[in-house]
Length: 496
Image 1 (cartoon, rainbow, N blue to C red):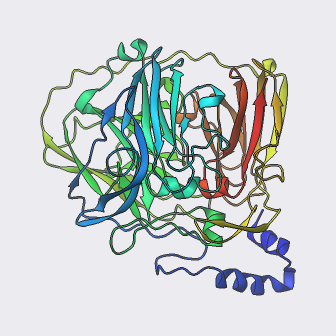
Image 2 (image 1 turned 90 degrees about the vertical axis):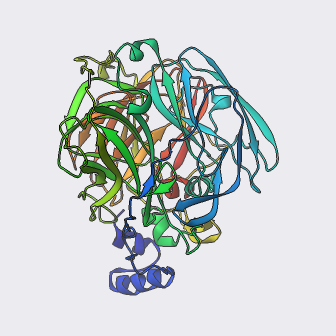
Protein backbone atom coordinates (compact mmCIF):
# COMPACT_ATOMS: atom_id res chain seq x y z
CA UNK A 1 0.00 0.00 0.00
CA UNK A 2 1.32 3.42 -0.91
CA UNK A 3 1.87 6.00 1.82
CA UNK A 4 -1.16 8.15 0.86
CA UNK A 5 -3.37 5.08 0.78
CA UNK A 6 -2.13 4.18 4.26
CA UNK A 7 -3.09 7.63 5.54
CA UNK A 8 -6.55 7.24 4.02
CA UNK A 9 -7.03 4.03 6.01
CA UNK A 10 -6.40 6.13 9.13
CA UNK A 11 -9.36 8.31 8.18
CA UNK A 12 -7.76 11.05 6.12
CA UNK A 13 -9.33 11.88 2.76
CA UNK A 14 -7.41 13.37 -0.11
CA UNK A 15 -7.83 16.90 1.24
CA UNK A 16 -6.52 15.82 4.62
CA UNK A 17 -3.35 14.08 3.55
CA UNK A 18 -1.15 16.96 4.63
CA UNK A 19 -2.86 16.96 8.03
CA UNK A 20 -2.30 13.20 8.17
CA UNK A 21 1.37 13.63 7.40
CA UNK A 22 1.56 16.20 10.20
CA UNK A 23 -0.11 13.82 12.64
CA UNK A 24 2.25 11.01 11.71
CA UNK A 25 5.17 13.38 12.17
CA UNK A 26 3.96 14.36 15.64
CA UNK A 27 3.87 10.66 16.56
CA UNK A 28 7.56 10.27 15.76
CA UNK A 29 9.97 11.74 18.25
CA UNK A 30 13.23 11.28 16.35
CA UNK A 31 16.13 12.48 18.47
CA UNK A 32 18.68 11.92 15.70
CA UNK A 33 19.39 14.73 13.27
CA UNK A 34 20.50 12.15 10.74
CA UNK A 35 17.04 10.55 10.61
CA UNK A 36 14.56 11.71 8.00
CA UNK A 37 10.93 10.78 8.64
CA UNK A 38 10.77 8.28 5.81
CA UNK A 39 14.35 7.04 5.54
CA UNK A 40 16.94 5.04 7.42
CA UNK A 41 19.50 6.80 9.61
CA UNK A 42 22.64 7.94 7.82
CA UNK A 43 25.48 5.51 8.46
CA UNK A 44 28.40 6.99 10.39
CA UNK A 45 31.66 5.23 9.54
CA UNK A 46 34.24 4.53 12.24
CA UNK A 47 38.03 4.60 12.04
CA UNK A 48 38.50 0.94 11.06
CA UNK A 49 41.19 0.46 13.71
CA UNK A 50 39.62 -2.49 15.60
CA UNK A 51 40.68 -5.90 14.36
CA UNK A 52 37.83 -8.12 13.18
CA UNK A 53 36.86 -10.55 15.95
CA UNK A 54 36.34 -14.13 14.82
CA UNK A 55 33.48 -15.53 16.88
CA UNK A 56 34.27 -18.66 18.87
CA UNK A 57 33.70 -21.87 16.90
CA UNK A 58 31.94 -24.69 18.75
CA UNK A 59 30.22 -28.01 18.08
CA UNK A 60 27.33 -29.96 19.60
CA UNK A 61 26.95 -30.06 23.37
CA UNK A 62 27.98 -26.47 24.07
CA UNK A 63 25.38 -24.67 26.15
CA UNK A 64 23.83 -21.34 25.18
CA UNK A 65 22.54 -18.85 27.73
CA UNK A 66 20.62 -15.81 26.49
CA UNK A 67 21.50 -13.06 28.94
CA UNK A 68 22.46 -9.43 29.38
CA UNK A 69 26.18 -8.73 29.08
CA UNK A 70 28.61 -5.90 28.46
CA UNK A 71 30.51 -5.44 25.20
CA UNK A 72 32.45 -2.73 23.35
CA UNK A 73 30.74 -2.31 19.99
CA UNK A 74 32.63 0.95 19.52
CA UNK A 75 36.20 1.02 20.78
CA UNK A 76 36.46 2.60 24.22
CA UNK A 77 32.73 2.39 25.03
CA UNK A 78 31.39 -0.63 26.90
CA UNK A 79 27.61 -0.87 26.89
CA UNK A 80 24.87 -3.34 27.72
CA UNK A 81 24.00 -5.91 25.05
CA UNK A 82 22.50 -9.38 24.82
CA UNK A 83 24.49 -12.48 23.95
CA UNK A 84 24.40 -16.28 24.04
CA UNK A 85 27.81 -16.98 25.58
CA UNK A 86 30.53 -14.34 25.94
CA UNK A 87 29.74 -10.78 24.91
CA UNK A 88 27.41 -9.85 22.08
CA UNK A 89 26.02 -12.44 19.62
CA UNK A 90 26.68 -16.16 19.95
CA UNK A 91 29.38 -18.62 18.94
CA UNK A 92 29.58 -20.13 15.46
CA UNK A 93 28.50 -23.77 15.31
CA UNK A 94 30.44 -25.92 12.85
CA UNK A 95 28.77 -29.31 12.49
CA UNK A 96 29.15 -32.26 10.12
CA UNK A 97 26.27 -33.50 8.00
CA UNK A 98 24.75 -36.65 9.51
CA UNK A 99 25.63 -35.77 13.10
CA UNK A 100 23.11 -35.37 15.90
CA UNK A 101 23.30 -32.02 17.66
CA UNK A 102 22.33 -31.40 21.29
CA UNK A 103 22.36 -27.79 22.49
CA UNK A 104 21.29 -27.06 26.09
CA UNK A 105 19.67 -23.63 26.23
CA UNK A 106 18.93 -21.43 29.25
CA UNK A 107 16.82 -18.30 29.16
CA UNK A 108 18.65 -15.79 31.33
CA UNK A 109 16.44 -12.90 30.22
CA UNK A 110 13.57 -11.34 32.13
CA UNK A 111 11.12 -12.25 29.36
CA UNK A 112 10.33 -15.31 27.25
CA UNK A 113 12.49 -16.28 24.32
CA UNK A 114 13.50 -19.31 22.23
CA UNK A 115 15.82 -20.21 19.35
CA UNK A 116 14.89 -20.59 15.69
CA UNK A 117 17.46 -22.50 13.63
CA UNK A 118 17.17 -20.46 10.43
CA UNK A 119 18.34 -22.58 7.49
CA UNK A 120 18.34 -25.92 9.30
CA UNK A 121 15.78 -28.57 8.37
CA UNK A 122 14.81 -29.62 11.88
CA UNK A 123 11.64 -31.24 13.28
CA UNK A 124 8.79 -28.83 13.90
CA UNK A 125 9.11 -29.33 17.68
CA UNK A 126 12.70 -28.00 17.49
CA UNK A 127 12.15 -25.20 14.96
CA UNK A 128 11.51 -22.36 17.40
CA UNK A 129 7.90 -21.59 16.44
CA UNK A 130 6.59 -18.50 18.28
CA UNK A 131 4.41 -20.82 20.38
CA UNK A 132 7.46 -22.79 21.61
CA UNK A 133 8.66 -20.40 24.28
CA UNK A 134 11.19 -20.89 27.06
CA UNK A 135 10.09 -18.72 29.97
CA UNK A 136 12.46 -16.54 31.96
CA UNK A 137 14.85 -18.60 34.06
CA UNK A 138 13.93 -21.89 32.42
CA UNK A 139 15.91 -24.25 30.18
CA UNK A 140 15.30 -26.42 27.13
CA UNK A 141 17.45 -28.94 25.25
CA UNK A 142 17.45 -28.52 21.48
CA UNK A 143 18.37 -31.78 19.79
CA UNK A 144 18.15 -32.71 16.11
CA UNK A 145 19.99 -34.56 13.36
CA UNK A 146 21.75 -32.62 10.62
CA UNK A 147 20.29 -34.21 7.50
CA UNK A 148 20.94 -31.74 4.70
CA UNK A 149 23.63 -30.51 2.34
CA UNK A 150 26.45 -28.30 3.58
CA UNK A 151 25.24 -24.74 4.06
CA UNK A 152 25.51 -21.58 6.14
CA UNK A 153 22.57 -21.24 8.52
CA UNK A 154 22.09 -19.04 11.56
CA UNK A 155 20.13 -18.91 14.80
CA UNK A 156 18.13 -16.21 16.55
CA UNK A 157 15.09 -15.77 18.86
CA UNK A 158 11.54 -15.95 17.56
CA UNK A 159 9.13 -14.66 20.26
CA UNK A 160 6.22 -12.89 18.62
CA UNK A 161 6.38 -9.08 19.02
CA UNK A 162 9.82 -9.33 20.70
CA UNK A 163 11.97 -10.81 17.92
CA UNK A 164 13.13 -7.43 16.62
CA UNK A 165 14.21 -6.18 20.02
CA UNK A 166 16.04 -9.36 21.00
CA UNK A 167 17.91 -9.71 17.72
CA UNK A 168 18.79 -6.01 17.52
CA UNK A 169 20.22 -6.02 21.04
CA UNK A 170 22.49 -8.95 20.31
CA UNK A 171 20.90 -12.40 20.09
CA UNK A 172 22.09 -14.08 16.88
CA UNK A 173 24.77 -16.49 15.73
CA UNK A 174 26.01 -18.47 12.73
CA UNK A 175 25.60 -22.22 12.15
CA UNK A 176 27.80 -23.86 9.49
CA UNK A 177 27.05 -27.36 8.17
CA UNK A 178 29.93 -29.20 6.50
CA UNK A 179 29.99 -32.30 4.28
CA UNK A 180 32.62 -34.51 2.60
CA UNK A 181 31.41 -33.35 -0.83
CA UNK A 182 32.01 -29.71 -0.01
CA UNK A 183 35.41 -30.41 1.59
CA UNK A 184 36.50 -32.24 -1.58
CA UNK A 185 36.29 -28.91 -3.44
CA UNK A 186 39.20 -27.58 -1.36
CA UNK A 187 37.61 -24.17 -0.93
CA UNK A 188 39.54 -21.63 1.17
CA UNK A 189 39.40 -22.67 4.84
CA UNK A 190 40.86 -22.01 8.29
CA UNK A 191 42.45 -18.55 8.31
CA UNK A 192 41.23 -17.95 4.76
CA UNK A 193 37.56 -18.45 5.63
CA UNK A 194 35.88 -15.51 7.37
CA UNK A 195 32.35 -15.83 8.84
CA UNK A 196 30.88 -12.30 8.81
CA UNK A 197 27.70 -11.35 10.69
CA UNK A 198 26.76 -7.89 9.37
CA UNK A 199 24.27 -5.83 11.39
CA UNK A 200 23.44 -2.21 12.03
CA UNK A 201 23.00 -0.82 15.55
CA UNK A 202 21.72 2.36 17.12
CA UNK A 203 23.82 3.34 20.13
CA UNK A 204 23.49 5.85 22.95
CA UNK A 205 26.39 7.99 24.16
CA UNK A 206 27.62 5.22 26.47
CA UNK A 207 27.80 2.62 23.68
CA UNK A 208 24.68 0.72 24.75
CA UNK A 209 22.19 -0.46 22.12
CA UNK A 210 18.92 1.45 21.87
CA UNK A 211 15.72 -0.17 20.62
CA UNK A 212 12.65 2.06 20.58
CA UNK A 213 11.00 2.10 17.15
CA UNK A 214 8.53 4.82 16.25
CA UNK A 215 5.46 4.28 14.11
CA UNK A 216 7.43 5.19 11.00
CA UNK A 217 10.21 2.77 11.95
CA UNK A 218 7.73 -0.05 12.34
CA UNK A 219 6.65 0.79 8.78
CA UNK A 220 10.15 0.77 7.24
CA UNK A 221 12.09 -1.36 9.73
CA UNK A 222 14.30 -0.28 12.63
CA UNK A 223 17.79 0.68 11.46
CA UNK A 224 20.89 2.15 13.03
CA UNK A 225 23.75 4.45 12.14
CA UNK A 226 26.54 2.09 13.25
CA UNK A 227 27.43 -0.88 11.03
CA UNK A 228 28.95 -3.83 12.87
CA UNK A 229 30.70 -7.00 11.74
CA UNK A 230 30.82 -9.84 14.26
CA UNK A 231 29.63 -7.41 16.92
CA UNK A 232 32.09 -4.52 16.49
CA UNK A 233 31.93 -1.29 14.54
CA UNK A 234 34.19 -0.62 11.55
CA UNK A 235 36.71 -3.46 11.94
CA UNK A 236 39.75 -4.30 9.81
CA UNK A 237 41.11 -7.68 8.73
CA UNK A 238 44.69 -8.39 7.57
CA UNK A 239 44.76 -10.57 4.43
CA UNK A 240 47.42 -12.08 2.18
CA UNK A 241 47.67 -12.13 -1.60
CA UNK A 242 45.37 -15.08 -2.19
CA UNK A 243 41.72 -16.16 -2.39
CA UNK A 244 39.47 -15.79 0.67
CA UNK A 245 36.06 -17.24 1.42
CA UNK A 246 33.64 -14.77 3.02
CA UNK A 247 30.54 -16.31 4.59
CA UNK A 248 28.23 -13.31 4.89
CA UNK A 249 25.04 -13.13 6.93
CA UNK A 250 22.76 -10.10 6.83
CA UNK A 251 21.62 -10.27 10.45
CA UNK A 252 20.03 -6.80 10.47
CA UNK A 253 16.42 -6.11 11.35
CA UNK A 254 15.55 -4.07 8.28
CA UNK A 255 18.66 -2.77 6.53
CA UNK A 256 19.76 -4.21 3.17
CA UNK A 257 23.36 -4.18 1.95
CA UNK A 258 24.46 -3.88 -1.68
CA UNK A 259 27.80 -5.59 -1.14
CA UNK A 260 30.75 -4.53 -3.30
CA UNK A 261 34.50 -3.99 -3.13
CA UNK A 262 35.73 -0.41 -2.90
CA UNK A 263 38.19 -0.91 -5.79
CA UNK A 264 35.36 -2.02 -8.10
CA UNK A 265 36.80 -5.52 -8.57
CA UNK A 266 34.45 -8.41 -9.21
CA UNK A 267 34.03 -11.31 -6.80
CA UNK A 268 32.39 -14.70 -7.02
CA UNK A 269 29.18 -15.92 -5.44
CA UNK A 270 29.49 -19.65 -4.71
CA UNK A 271 26.63 -20.23 -2.29
CA UNK A 272 23.44 -18.95 -0.75
CA UNK A 273 20.99 -19.85 2.04
CA UNK A 274 20.71 -23.56 1.24
CA UNK A 275 24.31 -24.26 0.27
CA UNK A 276 26.55 -24.11 -2.77
CA UNK A 277 25.32 -22.92 -6.15
CA UNK A 278 25.63 -25.22 -9.19
CA UNK A 279 28.46 -23.05 -10.61
CA UNK A 280 30.27 -19.88 -9.47
CA UNK A 281 28.63 -16.58 -10.42
CA UNK A 282 30.82 -13.52 -11.02
CA UNK A 283 29.38 -10.17 -9.86
CA UNK A 284 30.51 -6.67 -8.95
CA UNK A 285 27.74 -6.15 -6.37
CA UNK A 286 25.19 -8.23 -4.49
CA UNK A 287 22.05 -6.95 -2.77
CA UNK A 288 21.51 -8.92 0.44
CA UNK A 289 18.31 -8.57 2.48
CA UNK A 290 17.78 -9.37 6.18
CA UNK A 291 17.94 -13.12 6.80
CA UNK A 292 19.79 -13.89 3.54
CA UNK A 293 23.28 -15.37 3.41
CA UNK A 294 25.91 -15.24 0.68
CA UNK A 295 28.99 -17.43 0.30
CA UNK A 296 31.62 -15.35 -1.53
CA UNK A 297 35.13 -15.77 -2.89
CA UNK A 298 37.31 -12.65 -3.01
CA UNK A 299 40.69 -12.69 -4.75
CA UNK A 300 43.36 -10.47 -3.17
CA UNK A 301 46.21 -11.95 -5.24
CA UNK A 302 46.49 -9.03 -7.67
CA UNK A 303 46.19 -6.28 -5.07
CA UNK A 304 49.38 -4.43 -4.22
CA UNK A 305 51.05 -5.19 -0.93
CA UNK A 306 50.26 -2.75 1.90
CA UNK A 307 47.14 -1.48 0.15
CA UNK A 308 43.60 -1.33 1.56
CA UNK A 309 40.31 -2.55 0.12
CA UNK A 310 36.92 -2.17 1.74
CA UNK A 311 33.86 -4.36 1.71
CA UNK A 312 31.19 -1.72 1.32
CA UNK A 313 27.53 -1.23 0.60
CA UNK A 314 26.85 0.65 -2.63
CA UNK A 315 23.77 2.77 -3.11
CA UNK A 316 20.81 1.07 -4.77
CA UNK A 317 17.41 1.97 -6.15
CA UNK A 318 13.93 0.53 -5.93
CA UNK A 319 12.90 1.65 -2.45
CA UNK A 320 12.65 5.11 -0.91
CA UNK A 321 13.41 4.26 2.71
CA UNK A 322 17.03 3.18 2.19
CA UNK A 323 19.69 2.67 -0.46
CA UNK A 324 20.71 6.29 -1.13
CA UNK A 325 24.03 6.04 0.71
CA UNK A 326 27.30 4.23 -0.05
CA UNK A 327 29.20 3.29 3.09
CA UNK A 328 32.15 1.13 4.14
CA UNK A 329 31.64 -2.01 6.25
CA UNK A 330 34.98 -3.80 6.69
CA UNK A 331 38.57 -2.87 5.79
CA UNK A 332 40.93 -5.46 4.35
CA UNK A 333 44.66 -4.71 4.72
CA UNK A 334 46.88 -6.67 2.31
CA UNK A 335 49.98 -7.16 4.46
CA UNK A 336 51.65 -10.38 3.26
CA UNK A 337 52.57 -12.08 -0.01
CA UNK A 338 51.59 -15.73 -0.39
CA UNK A 339 51.47 -18.20 -3.23
CA UNK A 340 47.90 -19.37 -3.77
CA UNK A 341 47.36 -22.91 -5.00
CA UNK A 342 43.57 -22.70 -5.02
CA UNK A 343 41.88 -23.76 -8.27
CA UNK A 344 38.31 -22.66 -8.87
CA UNK A 345 36.06 -25.71 -9.47
CA UNK A 346 34.03 -25.52 -12.67
CA UNK A 347 31.13 -27.21 -10.86
CA UNK A 348 30.17 -26.75 -7.22
CA UNK A 349 26.93 -28.58 -6.55
CA UNK A 350 24.25 -30.64 -8.22
CA UNK A 351 20.76 -29.25 -7.69
CA UNK A 352 17.80 -30.95 -9.34
CA UNK A 353 15.40 -28.26 -10.59
CA UNK A 354 11.82 -28.66 -9.41
CA UNK A 355 9.50 -28.67 -12.41
CA UNK A 356 6.57 -26.27 -12.26
CA UNK A 357 4.57 -29.02 -13.97
CA UNK A 358 5.03 -31.16 -10.85
CA UNK A 359 3.37 -28.55 -8.62
CA UNK A 360 0.00 -29.66 -7.30
CA UNK A 361 -1.04 -26.22 -6.05
CA UNK A 362 -0.25 -22.55 -6.56
CA UNK A 363 -0.81 -20.16 -3.65
CA UNK A 364 -0.73 -16.38 -4.03
CA UNK A 365 0.12 -14.06 -1.14
CA UNK A 366 -0.49 -10.32 -1.34
CA UNK A 367 2.27 -8.68 0.69
CA UNK A 368 1.76 -5.16 -0.64
CA UNK A 369 -1.20 -4.08 1.48
CA UNK A 370 -1.46 -2.66 4.99
CA UNK A 371 -4.63 -2.79 7.05
CA UNK A 372 -6.22 -4.01 10.29
CA UNK A 373 -4.63 -1.31 12.45
CA UNK A 374 -5.11 -1.36 16.21
CA UNK A 375 -3.19 -0.45 19.32
CA UNK A 376 0.02 -2.26 20.04
CA UNK A 377 3.65 -1.79 20.87
CA UNK A 378 7.18 -2.65 19.80
CA UNK A 379 9.94 -2.51 22.35
CA UNK A 380 7.68 -0.67 24.80
CA UNK A 381 6.89 2.34 22.58
CA UNK A 382 3.73 3.56 20.93
CA UNK A 383 2.99 1.87 17.64
CA UNK A 384 0.06 0.79 15.56
CA UNK A 385 -0.36 -2.95 15.22
CA UNK A 386 -1.19 -4.82 12.05
CA UNK A 387 0.00 -2.37 9.41
CA UNK A 388 1.82 -5.20 7.62
CA UNK A 389 -0.25 -8.15 6.47
CA UNK A 390 -0.20 -11.23 4.26
CA UNK A 391 -3.43 -11.58 2.28
CA UNK A 392 -4.95 -9.02 4.65
CA UNK A 393 -4.27 -11.14 7.75
CA UNK A 394 -1.97 -10.66 10.71
CA UNK A 395 -0.45 -13.44 12.79
CA UNK A 396 -2.67 -15.56 15.00
CA UNK A 397 -0.74 -18.09 17.06
CA UNK A 398 -3.46 -20.75 16.92
CA UNK A 399 -4.89 -20.29 13.43
CA UNK A 400 -3.68 -22.53 10.59
CA UNK A 401 -3.62 -20.32 7.52
CA UNK A 402 -2.38 -22.83 4.94
CA UNK A 403 -2.66 -26.63 4.98
CA UNK A 404 -0.06 -28.48 2.93
CA UNK A 405 0.16 -32.17 2.05
CA UNK A 406 3.38 -33.94 3.04
CA UNK A 407 5.77 -34.48 0.11
CA UNK A 408 3.72 -32.22 -2.15
CA UNK A 409 5.37 -29.71 -4.49
CA UNK A 410 3.80 -26.26 -4.59
CA UNK A 411 4.32 -22.85 -6.17
CA UNK A 412 4.02 -19.87 -3.84
CA UNK A 413 3.77 -16.37 -5.32
CA UNK A 414 4.59 -13.30 -3.23
CA UNK A 415 2.94 -10.22 -4.76
CA UNK A 416 4.35 -6.83 -3.74
CA UNK A 417 2.86 -5.01 -6.74
CA UNK A 418 1.00 -2.50 -4.59
CA UNK A 419 3.65 -2.06 -1.92
CA UNK A 420 6.38 0.53 -1.51
CA UNK A 421 8.60 -1.32 0.98
CA UNK A 422 10.82 -4.37 0.40
CA UNK A 423 9.86 -7.67 2.02
CA UNK A 424 12.37 -10.52 2.44
CA UNK A 425 10.02 -13.51 2.67
CA UNK A 426 11.20 -16.49 4.74
CA UNK A 427 9.75 -20.01 4.97
CA UNK A 428 10.50 -22.26 7.92
CA UNK A 429 10.95 -26.00 7.51
CA UNK A 430 11.96 -26.12 3.85
CA UNK A 431 14.26 -24.79 1.16
CA UNK A 432 12.85 -23.50 -2.11
CA UNK A 433 13.94 -22.55 -5.60
CA UNK A 434 13.18 -19.15 -7.11
CA UNK A 435 11.33 -19.81 -10.35
CA UNK A 436 10.55 -16.28 -11.56
CA UNK A 437 10.51 -12.58 -10.75
CA UNK A 438 8.34 -10.12 -12.66
CA UNK A 439 8.25 -6.36 -12.27
CA UNK A 440 10.99 -4.41 -10.54
CA UNK A 441 14.36 -6.12 -11.15
CA UNK A 442 12.62 -8.65 -13.35
CA UNK A 443 15.08 -11.55 -13.18
CA UNK A 444 16.58 -14.25 -10.96
CA UNK A 445 19.79 -12.99 -9.36
CA UNK A 446 23.11 -14.78 -8.95
CA UNK A 447 22.59 -15.87 -5.34
CA UNK A 448 19.04 -17.02 -6.13
CA UNK A 449 20.18 -19.80 -8.47
CA UNK A 450 20.59 -22.29 -5.63
CA UNK A 451 18.43 -23.35 -2.69
CA UNK A 452 16.92 -20.52 -0.70
CA UNK A 453 14.90 -20.02 2.47
CA UNK A 454 14.57 -16.23 2.20
CA UNK A 455 13.85 -14.22 -0.95
CA UNK A 456 13.69 -10.45 -1.37
CA UNK A 457 10.53 -9.08 -2.98
CA UNK A 458 11.07 -5.42 -3.83
CA UNK A 459 8.24 -2.92 -4.36
CA UNK A 460 6.45 -3.60 -7.64
CA UNK A 461 7.69 -7.20 -7.85
CA UNK A 462 6.05 -10.60 -7.93
CA UNK A 463 8.32 -13.49 -7.02
CA UNK A 464 7.40 -17.12 -7.54
CA UNK A 465 9.10 -19.91 -5.62
CA UNK A 466 8.68 -23.66 -5.87
CA UNK A 467 9.30 -26.11 -3.03
CA UNK A 468 8.66 -29.64 -1.85
CA UNK A 469 7.38 -29.92 1.72
CA UNK A 470 9.11 -32.82 3.48
CA UNK A 471 8.81 -31.92 7.19
CA UNK A 472 5.63 -32.68 9.13
CA UNK A 473 4.20 -30.11 11.53
CA UNK A 474 3.26 -26.48 12.06
CA UNK A 475 5.66 -23.84 10.75
CA UNK A 476 5.50 -20.12 10.00
CA UNK A 477 6.36 -18.01 6.99
CA UNK A 478 6.90 -14.29 7.32
CA UNK A 479 8.69 -11.15 6.28
CA UNK A 480 12.22 -11.10 7.72
CA UNK A 481 12.12 -7.36 8.23
CA UNK A 482 11.75 -8.01 11.96
CA UNK A 483 9.56 -4.99 12.67
CA UNK A 484 7.18 -6.17 9.94
CA UNK A 485 7.23 -9.68 11.42
CA UNK A 486 6.55 -8.43 14.95
CA UNK A 487 3.79 -6.22 13.53
CA UNK A 488 1.98 -9.35 12.34
CA UNK A 489 3.36 -10.04 8.85
CA UNK A 490 3.52 -13.77 9.54
CA UNK A 491 1.20 -16.75 8.99
CA UNK A 492 1.12 -20.40 10.02
CA UNK A 493 1.23 -23.33 7.62
CA UNK A 494 0.83 -26.96 8.58
CA UNK A 495 2.28 -29.91 6.72
CA UNK A 496 0.43 -33.19 7.28
